[in-house]
Length: 138
Ligand code: AMP
Ligand code: ZN
Image: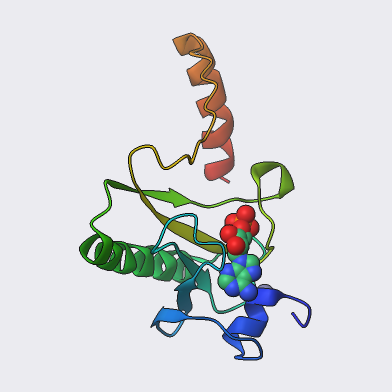
C-alpha cells in the first residue's frame, strides 16, 4: 500500500530501527517508546488487521513475538511485558497495517488499560460461546 507508513518501513522508504527480520515479519522500535525497549512486530505484507491473516502469517508473527519478547526481557529486565494489538479505531488502532506491541512494563509506569468486567452468569458465557463455535464450524 503506497500510503501506509509500515509498508514504507518494510520497503526501506522511511527509516526504522530494526531489531529482527525474517521472511514474513519485521520487528522495529516503536517511535513513541512508552517504555524503553517498546517494539512493534509487523507483518511485512500489508494486512490491515488480525482478521485478514492466513495461518502462516499468524504463526510467523507469534514466533517473532516470542523470540523478541525473550530478548527484551533479557535486555531490559522489566517487571512484566504487555502484548498489545489493536484492530479497528474503537480498539485504539492508529496504523492500519497489522502489528503487535511488545511493551516492557514496570511497576507504576503509568500505562493503564481500563477493564470493566461484567461477570455474567454461566448461561451468558454459553450463549456467547455458541455464537463463536457456530462460526468456527463453518
Ligand atoms: P496502534 O495502531 O495503536 O497499535 O499504534 C501504532 C504505533 O505505531 C504507535 O505506538 C506509534 O508510536 C507507532 N508508529 C507510528 N509511526 C511509526 C514509525 N514511523 N516508526 C515506528 N513506530 C511508529
Ligand atoms: Zn501497510
